[in-house]
Picture 1 (tube, rainbow, N blue to C red):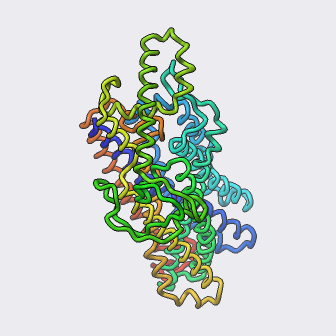
Picture 2: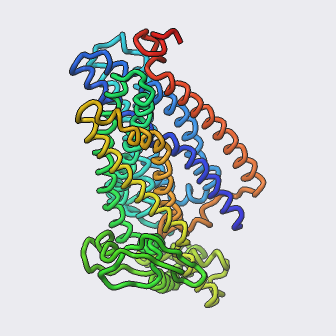
Picture 3: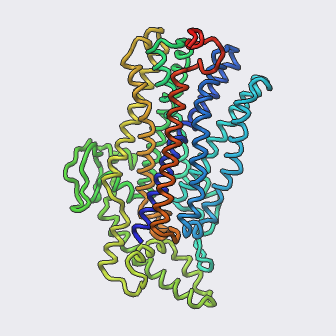
Length: 518
């Protein structure tokens, strides 16, 4: 059973991480194209139209492969996570359906118009189509993150003992879920940072090569300014997300911070530590005073709950959940006894915790103290991967702000102020891969930190899978990994090819490689 669950999780993780190579760049590049084309419409300067077309070419390559890798993910909910789909399909399916009908079709339709309607419509009309592409890509992220945010903090739903499913009680609550909203803004702003680093880095390459300098200078400045505002927004929304984690997912926060015991404020923040799951303590710990309280309680004296206390509290919830499951089994044996329904619904908040026991026994009347202890320990994820994934994300986020701040200051000064600063240009170029590392680290914190739950506090991951064999999962996992790797190779090859050519790839006859006959 554990191998089946692990393989199912691994397959979804690999497909999600592959897909998320393309998503951030799509989110950010779409708005950079809007900015570049807006300047073209306002000024009428041809160079900004060329910028929109060239960066749009790279955007199109990324978009096409991103769509290909994303389509399979939604099907996995039915193939690999059938019980999850059955149990919460009424809630989870709604935002995904809206995403497909509203956002994906909008984005996919107008991206074709973006590429092929330059000479068929007016400047302003074409700019409108570009804006619709950007809105479509960002609306797509909104609905997907509404669904994911509900998995992190499930509100607006009720358990129905008759159908044995979770059902939607308030779509408004799901849509305006505070976790979903902060998650959306943090994620899309991370995409804006990714695209800004991408454009900044490639523009720096042109500047160092003295290639198409007017084009490179303008691209560099736009990416620096957009990236600066985006990096500030990422930091602000990351702070908001951390506050929500402390409020709604204290087990994730405690694991993320390597905090084993509840600490009274003021609480420090660990810069580096070595969490030890066996001893339930940190082997070493270097802290900055007060920062933990400020980050997670927004005060200088706030307390932060530790994993041991959370485990003890969850143990009580597991006992309550066990009682509710026994009552539910009683109702299932005698469905005509509808008087039990209100009682079950009134106390259903701990049902999910009771389900954790079924990992160790199917007979809830035979639960031993050892089983109860194991189930309670399961409610807190492994600390070490979360601790360092979070700090990698934070460190890179700070580096992006510094990079964009320096790039903005120097690029708005004299021309030579940034063109001759080789260290800055090299930093921007070599930093191109790092936004993806930061994005992946953030998703590890969000998704691995939710364990052992598929839906936090409601449905354990081990109960969410389909009835598949290990061989079937290994076969599909191998196939997906092989195909996605080939697609990634194609993406990287095309990106390198056109990025090296630069605007010469447009075939206008005005740029460096064309004018030299290359």
